[in-house]
Structure formats: C-alpha cells, structure tokens
Image (cartoon, rainbow, N blue to C red; front, side):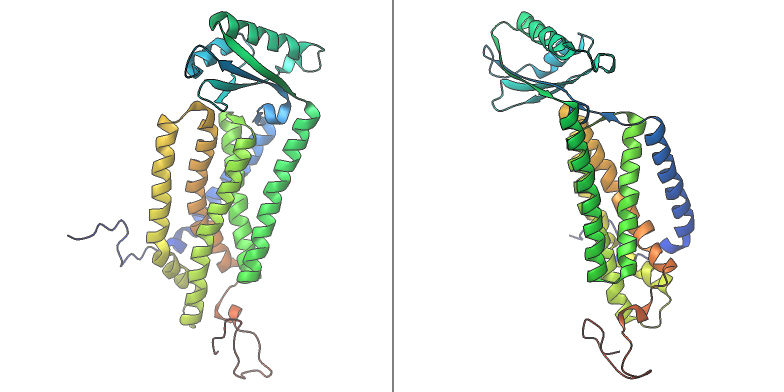
Length: 326
C-alpha cells in the first residue's frame, strides 16, 4: 500500500517570492496588536490584578457541579468566575477578581466572599469551605513583573543560543520570529478580551519553545546547504531548505493543531484561554519560521562566506568552524 504524503518529495514552492508581501502583512498585524494592547488593554485575571480564591468541597456528591456552580456564582454580578477542580473530583477552587468599582474599598473583598459562600451553601447544602485566600495588588504586580521578565529572558537566551550555534544574523532572525509570535498573541488577547493570567504566560513560554524548535530545523538545513551549494543564490537556497523541511514542519504543526482544536471544542472552559493561545502560537510560529526567520537572512546578507573564516592570507585554504575545507 502506498504511503500517504501530505507534502510530495518534489515540492518546490517559491516562498521567497512572497517574502515582501508576507513581511508587510505581519508588520501591519504587529503594529495593530501593539495598538490594541495600548488602547483596549489586557483582561488581567486574579493572578495579576488581585482578588479572592475560595476552596470548596462538595461533601454530598462525588464530583463538583462545576458548570452549575459557574452559573450560580456568575449570577451574583461580580463577573465571570474561574473555577477549577482542586485535588479530589469534588473539590474546586473558585477565583474571582475584585470588580473595578470595588477596588480600594475597605471590606469589598469580604462582602464579595460572603455573598459567594452564602449562595453556594444555600444551593448546595453540605458544601464545605476549606479556605479563602486573597491575592493582593502588590503580589499580583510582582507576579506580572516576574512573568514579563521570564518571557524576555527566554527570548534573549534563545537569541544568544542561536547566535552561538550559527551566526549573529541567525540570532537576529530567531529573535525577530519570537517577537512576532509573542506580539500577535498579545494582540489576540487584547482583541478578544479573554482572561490573561499565569496560564497564558505558561502558554507563551511554550510557544517560544515551539517556535524556536521549528526555526532551528529550518536554520540547520540552511546552514547545511550553504556549505553544500557554495555558488547558489541565497534566496534560491532558502527556498530549497524550507521545501526540504516542509514535510516535517507540516506534520508536526498539523498533529498539534488537531489536538488543540479538539481541546478548544471539547475541553474544559478553565483552560480555554491557554488552549487558544497555544493554537494561535503554533500557527503563527510555523508561519514566522518561514516568512520571518528565513527572509531576514537575505536582508542581513547571509551567504556561503558566513561560515568560512578568513585564512592567514587571502585565498589561502582553511577550515570553517565545523571542519569543512573551504
């Protein structure tokens, strides 16, 4: 039986032909994302703005009625709660951000907590409150700062790694691709106003790792071909490298997207934001590896000589850093 191939072996797509158009579209989307974040802002969750976390055990049932509980708490008018199973199937964690109009008011958090607990115990007799924790504004600010530092540190460390592993032009291209992916993800959350919490920071760090992996695969093939085809024009060589790795890229991205879409449609609401960020990140990460990371090498004048150091004398034979005779 003949094996199914999503990408034929003789694929020869001229990706570089559209690099200027793709770059313009991406740049416009990045600018729009920055504007959206500046104008609309992000819908920060309890982790970043402060609020209450209430832990409840439903002693009368084997499982907590999460869906009905979400409706019960949401009907109180304090906003949409974030409810997750916490430990056993009948234990949940309810996280509520303090309404903006109540921020700074003494006793506002206690009033909201009492209303939520009272409503739960009224509708679900026997429900036991195991604890109430407050996330202060100071703690939430610290979490946001540390999350931002983690993102920036990861991006810089990755750029340095690519620089050392290849050449500085590759480091610039890799960092630009990561900035593209993260910026569009921020723009998506500013547009949709989905809750932005620590789960999304985790998704962003995962996206950075995936995008790096995909970019490294393309870069590694480009480097191999730079040594193999010394006289090939760089745009043609990049096209060849992308086409040679396209099957791997498509299969990896497609299998991940299938799983993530299933989680979006069938998964719990508590991880919807995380799953949405991951889905978008996989798509834009795959795109940026082809239309950001690779074309930048053309504009930075990468060529076969990038891996051939100057010898003792002009024209003298020597070896590059990988041991290939030039």
